[in-house]
Length: 135
Image 1 (cartoon, helix red, strand yellow):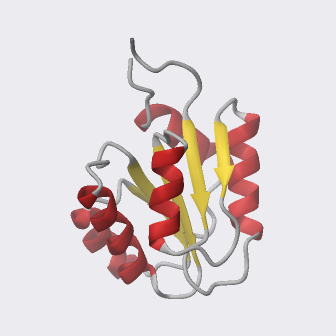
Image 2 (cartoon, helix red, strand yellow):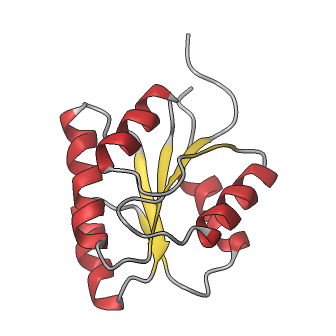
């Protein structure tokens, strides 16, 4: 029997970044769009984020990073998903990420990057289009 129901997204703030207003705005927009959202709070390790995503049967992880550690933290989350045989959980994110870093992050497996100015409508639409519950 397959899993049904709304798209489940873990929204997480990895690392030492202490600013989470944007993550909370995205979490609320996804929730208002009918998705189930698990917000992990500040200062999460990649291990905690991946554990939460697996325990919560998430379809996606949305990472919010403003600290500049995006290359390291995104890569670690992706590596852990692979190690845990959970690569079906898509990773997307946003924050202060230089344009030059976006293509390498996508090449590593990040599904999408949203930079400042991205609208909540655009993010919700992208999630609806690209993230699906298994049937």
